Length: 57
Image 1 (spheres, one colour):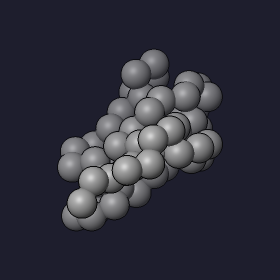
Image 2 (cartoon, rainbow, N blue to C red):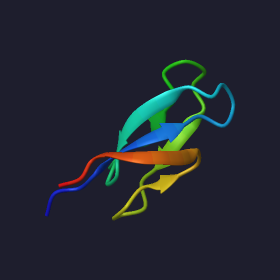
Image 3 (cartoon, helix red, strand yellow):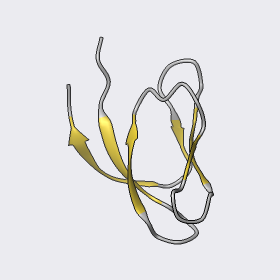
């Protein structure tokens, strides 16, 4: 099964970044380094606000 891509806003610097919904490693903000997503064994737990689904598969 394929996953979705989401646009996530960083709570610290408000940078928008595209993150895979089933990320298997920790995803950090490209600007400030704040953790945006943590792996949970299935769907990733997002720490920032999910703005939209960029690509649904």
